Length: 310
Image 1 (cartoon, rainbow, N blue to C red):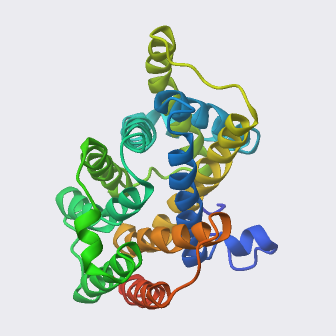
Image 2: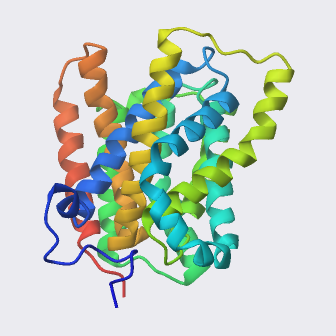
């Protein structure tokens, strides 16, 4: 009998994709990079592309990318998909529909730096949901690693100066972003059905897009408009490809390989990548607090990701 499609590729599998499929740390690092870019792009799109339209078109585009690759798996696993439809609907509602609308809507009212800081609460909510749903507890090393990497995030976001806290103001966007992270923590902690990852992602993307479609139609009917220009096209191409089709596939595979609690600290790479992107695209300079923050984040991830839950 061939191995379950949800299992890692067999040891004798060859080629770069087969190798990548067995590298959870690289997959999760790339996920953090793509999602950091999504925060930057989402903030740039605020006021240019309505949040509901951005969320719907993101996943409608992702389906077009995924479907040709997923179709053989969908046909072969159609009975299993029906069997696990309830779990797939929960994944779609939490990680695709609700979280996307909340996060893009929040970015219209808060700064990208606030979003990066709040997104760093992800490991806490993943750990809490894993405990509530499955009784999975953090080990001491995992808790220490998460705390250490969060310290590194704070060093980067606060630019090495605690006085920066005074300039961070709480607004409705911050509150909504925090609610979004609670929802995404639930999505991250849920156990995936025993399906091929392409099947899981394509079905959840399709169900999520269907959930968003009525909101999209309602939003357009009430006057929401997209600016038809090159910036909008570039935004939609990026969000459909990198943080959607690729990042969710990589994230789900990473969680499958090492579990949600060990994968969670990789959320803290997002402010690291976000600051690097700012240096590249916004001409910001590398400073000492960046280096200190990077070291703390990477050390925390190394400690937490290598520790197995009991």
